Structures are given as structure tokens and as C-alpha cells.
Image 1 (cartoon, rainbow, N blue to C red):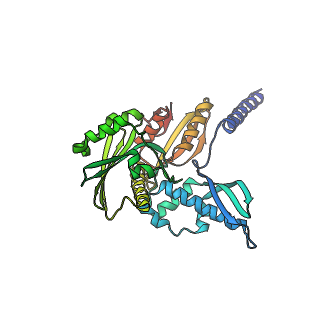
Image 2 (cartoon, helix red, strand yellow):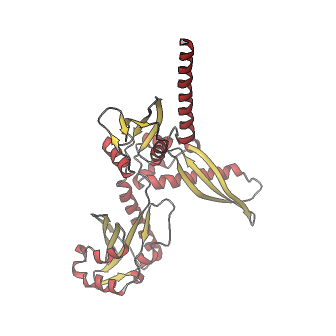
Length: 359
């Protein structure tokens, strides 16, 4: 009788753990590492010749995808450290790739690739090079450039302004800022011109408010002969940042010079935005978080959030019991930042004990 009772207890325990395992298997989205960096629409074309080698073209696509990723997450001052990255090093960071499309047109081979880089391996590589990456976060900015001729005391705005005309002509795939140019409005032109004598201190709020954007860049380009002084008023929500640059021998009537100035300014703004989102990969803060097993939806949502959070270096399930699933998380930041990021996704944590509890 005692034997039968023990046997039944073992059977119940066995069924419990089998059920728990199946629940975790079917409802969880656990990954050993957090999400990869996916670079899509990498286009390569080569003439179809006698020595045509498809593998060489794909290798070229890997290099192009890597350079695009570097452009997204690395400041311009650090890119020089990555000039001589070997193909084998790049391949070692690739998690997977796919050929989206390939075709021959007029004896030219065209291929479109999608390449996924393992985020952990990529961050480790940058850390060895003493480079701190940034979170690749795309953002819209209202952009208003104004050229001020200090000799004639005149303002060039909108369609009369070559910077305005050329700003969005060339879009780089790796740029994170999406520039929204204002519509040409006579009232706005009149308002700006009325502020000529105090334009450096004018906040442009009457114009900015029309576009319902949290971020803006107002650029005042003071022209004195062929020398330029560029004052950029960069507003991130309610925080205003001023940046001053000087450029010598710039002829704004030369289209190539204007194009170069546009590229230089875009690089400055990209670096500024990246600086706000720097990840200190040398900080690897370990966390233990447990989640109740009975809430499979919460487990799935929690793991999905970990996969999407760029500051997660690594995570895995290291223990299960009858009540909880335990996660070991390595975070590139402070505990306060982790709590803040979780709160932003509507996750509340009880942090009173060493092992935190997802409530």
C-alpha cells in the first residue's frame, strides 16, 4: 500500500515536470543570446565574366553589410580603428545570411542579401578595439537651415537656400536621423526675418510646434566671404544643446562644396545622437530575475523584451522549480537603468532581495 502511494507521488511529480517542460518549450521564446543585428537589402552587382565567382560577390556583400552596421553603431572618430577588419573576422560575427533576390540583367549579376550579425560577438569585437557602440535608434528631427549673409544682412531660407535644397538628396543607409524639412510658409519666412537682429537667441518654437516633433535641429550658417560659422541648436525634447563649427574657404555657389558641407554636418549630428545612446560594454552587471511559471504569457513577453533590449549582453534560464523560472541576465549598465527599461515596457520588479521578482 505504501509502495503504491509512493509510486503515485512519483508519477504526479513526473507529470508536473513534464508539463512544466512542455510549457516552457511551447510558450517560451528563450534564446541563448539576445537579438542579432539584421542588415537587409545589401545590393551587389558584378559583370558576368569568365572568372565569375559567386562566393566572392557574397563575401563582398558581407563586407558591405559589416560597414553599414559599423556606420550605424560606431562614432565617426572610432571608424578609423575598423579600417582593416579581415573577412574571416567578419564571417566569425555572422549568425546567418540569405539571398533575397538574384538576377542577370545585360550580363550583369545582381544580388540582394540579408545578413544577421551576432550582437554579442560584434560587441565583443568592438570592446577589444576599445570602442563603445551606440544603440542604433532611429529618430525623426525637424531640420531648418538658415544662411545668414553677414555682409548684405540677408537671410536665405527654404528654396532659396542650397543647404535646404540638397539636404535630403542623398540618404545614407547607416544614418539614424530622419530629417523632416519644413514646408515653405510665407508666415514662417516673415517671422524668421523679423528676428534677424536676435536670431542666435531665437528659439523657433512658433515654427517647431507646427510639426509635433520632440526633436529639432536649427542651423544658422553665418557667411562671411568664403568662411562659414555654423551654429547648431539641437533640441532633444526639452533639452537644448548648442554646437559651433567653423569652415574655411567654402564657396556656397559650388554644388560639390555644398554637398561636402551637408555630409560634414550630417556626420556631426549623427555623432551627437550616438553619444546620447552609448553602451558601455565594459560594464557587465549580473542580475537574477525569477518569473512565476503559471504565467506563460508573461514569460514570453519578458523574454521578447530581453531580446529587443540592446543593453542586454546575454541571458539564459539557469534554474527551474515548481513555482518559478530563474533568469540569469548580464546587463551593460546599472541596475537603475535596467529597472527603468523594464518600467518603460510595463514590467514591475520587486528588488528587495538578491533575486528579483517579476511581479
